[in-house]
Image (tube, rainbow, N blue to C red; front, side, top):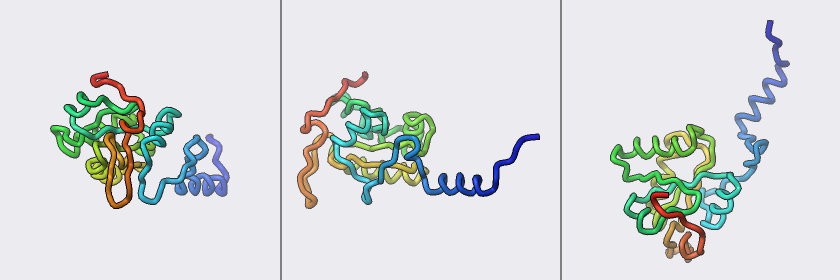
Amino acid sequence: MPQRLPLDFVVLLSLAAVLGLGGIYGFARAMPPDGRIDASEAHAMAARGEISILDVRAEREWRQTGLAQGAVGASIHNPDGRDGFIAAALVAVRGDLDRPVATIAETGVRSTKAQAWLVAAGFTQVYNIKEGMFGRYDETGAEPGWLNRGLPVVSYPN
């Protein structure tokens, strides 16, 4: 007959799951209130294996500039629309909706849309590299972008 766990242990384990104590696995990091991270931070997190980066631009854009090093191409221009994009994102994270993921586009517009789609699909830790590949210059200030920061890219197809 299987041994039962003490009730207080089960309650504690359940509480840890509800509170998202993923820090046990090395991801003890508070999400910024707006879910934004800069390109340098995203690059460092990807290099440490803490985050998956999804490049949501069109395939022709990947060919022009390459992909951010460590990024997977998962275009929001998927022929199957939003469902196709979500399916590609799920493949990139091996079906783990709790895997931290960051979206990147040209200047942050499409990555914001992709971020919202992923959250609506049940992804729990979705960041937005709002400055994008080329930089963003708006009322919040100037952000140089992945390419202008000199961060590494890989050719597409890689």
